[in-house]
Length: 332
Image 1 (tube, one colour):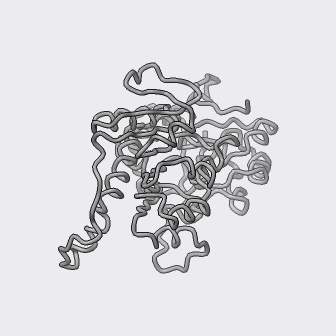
Image 2 (cartoon, helix red, strand yellow):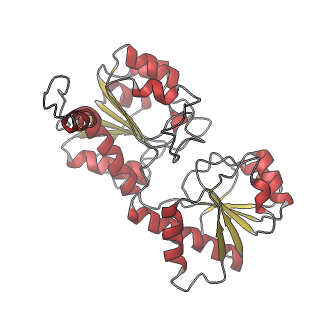
Image 3 (spheres, helix red, strand yellow):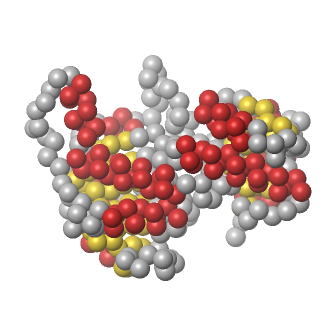
């Protein structure tokens, strides 16, 4: 099997090559390119059996059509999310889509808590100050988490890991999910309205679907307690950015921590320090002193990258041998 690996970074190649070297995957040949998969680049897949893509790439209808014309039979998503893939088109053209559903829930959950702690204790501001020999404390007053209420929206693997971390901090943990997780015996499940209204810390851990698109908007923000802290490490479009910005301006939030945000596709993972940003979202969010933004790096831990490379190559092997791995993505 020949796989074209789109959007290669040095760390991608390092971990995939290390995994490939174990001898099990030598029937798989990978070629790495640094361009992202999209309408203009999909033609590069000609002569390959499969492509490997990531969450920041466009796998819409036109891309799927081009991949089909190129003879591609398999799309390997080296991530859990697949909302950027036109699954109906893939199914129509007989292209299998596979993903990595649970590479390291703890990596993302720990980053979510790191964001929360950084935002509520203003660590990012203090770090910049001290580097300039400014040791003043004005504007750095924070809050503690112990004894407060954490609201977890979505208690899958990552949300469950976050719930356990919050519980370890001495927080009262409540949650909203369509399906209760019986392992979380310390969590009280409530309606979305109740979770939003009672939580001091709200952390989003749900997939992006039609139902969850802009889950956080002016209406749901109005349900939240004053001075709430909001964390999002899932998908940017869970939050309607304009409404979030208005809520920040109105003083609704004590702090906001974002590892994902709308308009990130095309800029995430790229060094744009010498460029003028074409969208205003990030610039506007960074203008607020109580907002902490990172570059979709929740997954970026050694353990996660090892698991991603191993599962992705295992998926390819299963496809080659006609077996199901359980990681296939299909339309409902």
